[in-house]
Image (cartoon, rainbow, N blue to C red):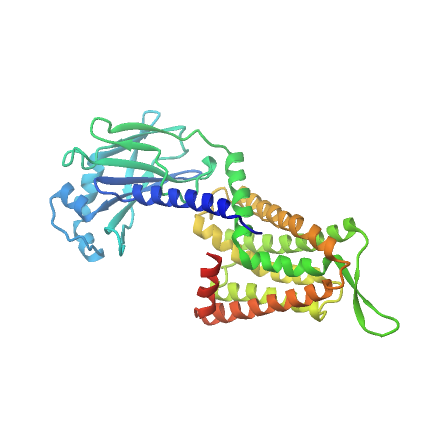
Length: 403
């Protein structure tokens, strides 16, 4: 797809606007952060403080470049301070703050900070509204602000949010309510559909695998009775060939849905990303080679089915990154797989009509051969990079061109 300069400029404007707002709001001076992860039957969270924040709170003198050895000895003091300065309740019931293992994040270009992770004990069912008291550092710094962020709330359609604020605490405004009713199963389900569509559209390896399967869909290989050679013969029916490629893609969807579910449910540990990503790259080359020299005669669905299993393990990594294991897992799997299928069908709908119009041109067989050869080269390149975990120079050069 060719992007016009105005469109690209507008896209870059919104991208950098969002990026700037996210960076500006994350770990700014005179701000601490309270994150919540709203799950199906519980609430987790964390409070993020810099070394300067900790020193102000409990009167220590720890350096800015923190590490675990520095944080561990002062944890009892920090925990006591945070418990005194925060409170969480709903419907007249108070929840107990239980701290878990903290994390010290060492940032090269920003001030280091510590994540004080916690679980709210006593949450049997997520309430409609959570009453929050946050009075951290306001006694030491009247300009300080506390930012409340819902990092994860499946029913509200929030995944891995680190920039959008729900509430802002400040002196004189230390007690507020967080509305948790703005969500539903359908909202979360729709979120996962969009995530599935988006993952296909940004997954170049998945797209190229689909393209390799689509290229020969508008022609059929026939043996010339005079020359005895095999030739590409254009199909006559748009409907038949279109539904044929949809059938192949459906086999691909069935396969990756199975392995995605297996990995997400923990029935079988997902293979290492190195192996999975290498096999995914190899699948592109094999599908392209089949276009040049038939490996499975008129049975492209076998390629889609076999390698779809490994593409499913690749999709499983998305669930891990988004923290989706175990929480609304069934609707998450259904929504994500439906989104992937929709994304694939949309790609087919964009590419297939063009190929159908070109199918009768004398150059179309060359389009198949040359296109498949290019896909094989890309496949080999990725196999080397992913299999041996190296960064080849061509990759950075291509990224600069595409950028």
